Length: 109
Image (tube, rainbow, N blue to C red):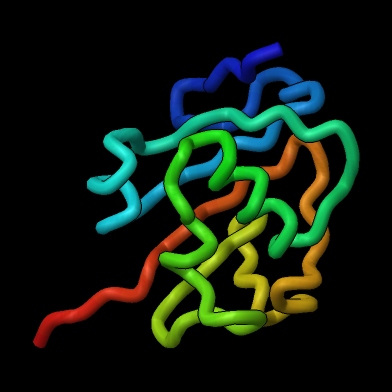
């Protein structure tokens, strides 16, 4: 079941077994989409979720955000608005109904 949004983007009903994934910056440009809904049958870690997400979109998202088992410097991943670095890092659990925001490392100056 897809989620409906209220006037300010808030949830108005359950997302069922879906996780909303929001892409930002160069990830959004590379994928050509701002967000998508990914079915999730059970809770998974952020690391597992990135692999599932990569399979869904056909782009190695995990390689754009990770170096082995660590986040690339400047990468930010939020689960329900909370930075995973303030939780359990890549072992943070994602469950159906969550919203995951992926911010790749940014460069410039």
